[in-house]
Length: 171
Length: 442
Image (cartoon, rainbow over all chains, first blue to last red; front, side, top):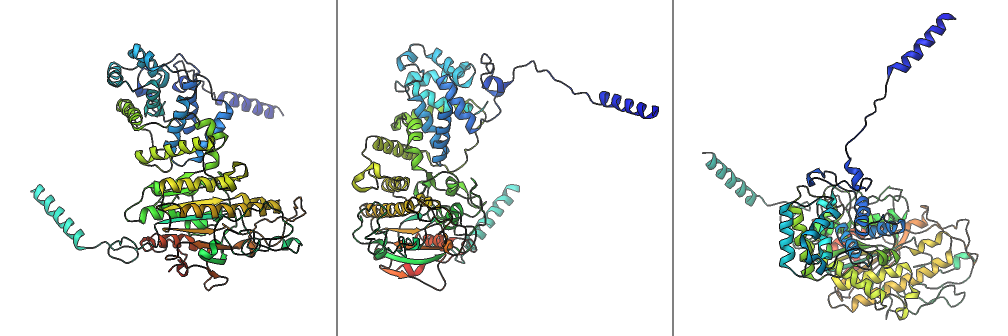
C-alpha cells in the first residue's frame, strides 16, 4: 500500500515538472494589429513591411473602413458579397464597387480646389489614409508632378488609383 | 564556335518545324477556319426541372385528375391553349408562329447518367459530359465547358466578351463559366452575370452611385496606379476567374451602369407584356438582361437559364404559371434577336431543360389540391425535350422527332453548338462523347 502511494506521488511530481508551457510576450507592434485599427496610431516605416496579400473579404472591409472611417455594416457586407458573386470578372466588380464608394455622398474627400491648395499635404494624408505610411520624397515628387500637370486629375480619381494599386492589396 | 553551333541548331529546329506539319487531334494537318452554320448561338437552359407531360406533351392538368389538356407554351410550341380550368395568367403569344415551326423539335431527349440535380443538369448540357457529382458545391466542373472549347478552339481565338453565361440564381451557377480542367480553365472562360443581383437592392445599393467614367478619366486612374505600382515591389496575385482586356472591361462596366440607370428610370426594355416591370419573374429578368447583352455585344456564344419552375417541388399551379411566362420570355427574346442588325438571320437558339421531374407526385399539395413533383432520378425525370430554332437556310423548319435511334441525349448539345460555330472538329478526340444533332441543320 505504501509503495503504491509512493508511485502515485512520483507520477504526479513527474507530470507537474515534465512539461512547462512557454509564454512569449510580444512587445513589438504586430502588423496585423495596426492594419485592423487595433493600434491605429502605428504606421508602416516602409512598404517593404507589407508582405501578405489581403483576401477579398479583407480587401473589401478594409476599403470600406478606409473610405468611410467606420466599420462596414453587416447588410452592406452581405450585399457586396452578393454583387461580387454576381459578376464573373472580379477585377471589374471591384472597380465598380470602389467607383460606387468614392462617388457616394457620405465619403470624406477633399475637393479638387482643396487638394490643389496644398498638394503635398494631400499626398501625405492620402498615403497615410490608404497605405498607412508616409510617402518618400520621390513618391511626393512624382504624384505632385502628375497632379500639377493635369487639372482633370481629381481626388476621386486619385483615391481610386490608390485603392486599385498593388500596395493597397498587401498588408 | 558556340555561337555557330547555336545558329546551326536554331536553323535545324526551324527547318524541322516547317517540314513537319502540326497534326491536329482530329487528324487534319492544318487548322481549318471552320465551316460555320451560323455566327451566333443562344443556348437556353429552360431549366428548373420540367416534365414533358406539361411541356411538349401539352397535358396541362390531366395528370392531376382533371380532364383538361392544352398547350401552355404557345410561343415555343404549336397547339391550342387550355380553354377551361385556367390556373395561370394567360399572356397572348408574342411570336408570329410558334418556334417549333421555325426549327426542329426533339420531343424525347435522354438524360442518361448521373443524379438529376439542377447543377448536374446544367453541367451536363454545358460540358457535354455526364457527371456523378451529386452536391451543389461552388466548384467549377471537371470537364471543360462549351465556353472554353469555343474560346480555345475557335480560329481566330475569341475573347471573353464573345462568350456569356447569365444565370437566374447564384449558388453554384457562377461556377459554370469555366472548368477546372488543366488544359482549359479561366483563361478560356465566359463572362458571367447574375442580373437579379445587379438589378435589385444589392446592386443598386452597392453600385448605384458608380459613375460611368470617360476614357480620359480611366486613363488618369491607370496613370496614377502605375506610378504607385512602380514604387511597390510586389504584385497582387491575379484574382480568381476570368479577366477581360482593359478595353472590354470598360465597355462592360459602362454597359452595366447604363442598364442600371435605364432600369431605375423605367426605360429598360423587358420581357413582359407592355413592358410592365410588375409582371416580371426572376426568369424574365434574366432573359431581359440577356437580350441587352446580346444587343450590346452581339456575342457569338451566350448561355442563359431559367429556374423558377423548380417551385414544382411544392406548388404545381405556380409551376404552370412560371412555365407559361418563361415560354413568353423565350418568344420575346427570339423576336428581339430577329430585330438586331447583326444577330438576325445569323443566330441559332437551342432550348433544353436541364432534366425532367418524376412521374409520381410527392406528398405535398398546393392551394388547388394538386400534387407536386420532385426530380429524384426516375425514368420520367431523365426525359426532356429540345428545340433548335434558326433561319430557314440554316435550320430545318417545322421538323419534329418523337423517337429516334440513337436517341438524342443531353450531352449532344455541347457538340452541336461546337458544330454550329465551326470548331467541333478541332476539339481533341475523346473530350466530347455526344453526337452532333446534324439532322436539325440543312
